Image (cartoon, rainbow, N blue to C red):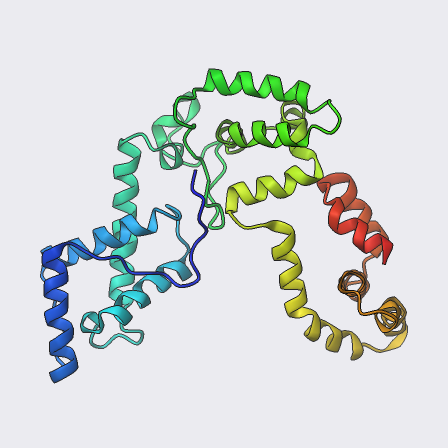
Length: 312
């Protein structure tokens, strides 16, 4: 299971020794005489292989923006690789990188990597030839889309862990053991999720997952991003613009929003401010804030946020 999210700044790795020598000579020629390097096939393969190996440390299905980020980082570190006639200077590298990742995924699939093998035709039931049949498609944010089982574990041993978890979740003040078992059984749970089971059946098999704390923990296991802190950080970043938007709203709705924002004038508590902003946003979108909070409390178990909104 991968533990690192996609980096804010992609670091281009060191390539093979001979490739680094060629790039060093090319960068020197570019700085002194402005000559761009035309990489030979061996050098280009070495560069693309190195980038592909670095990318799959984070995810095997990068987004288009992430391909842009990698290609831009490459020509920034090695300016001699910039392309003539390209607006960005790296569009060709980006296209080549996409093909390389596709071929690299095929190699991983042949080696039995579950993250990509699950999308192959031969893994589909009933001889269906469609690669997407009855299997959840990978999303760009899913760092751990279909991780392999932990070393030494099999489906049988993890199924036994799941059955133990059914008893542990019934005990009071047992969050630590539940979290440990949920971490251990993550891979088999993801293998079930990508087959898109019925929610009712899945909830019966994994009741612990529908606890408040486990919703957040599972999100972090899948994306390596903490859910609550990221949500509030983004909310705080947009709060200024949202407040301006609310202030420009007139009429009956504008007055209703002003009433919802009254608590922010009485205290500097950041939680009160967040709650009022979300309630006001609901009103701005002609939604009932109390209904929205109730929906989250019932169906998503996002109680930490909801309690804050409800008490403001």
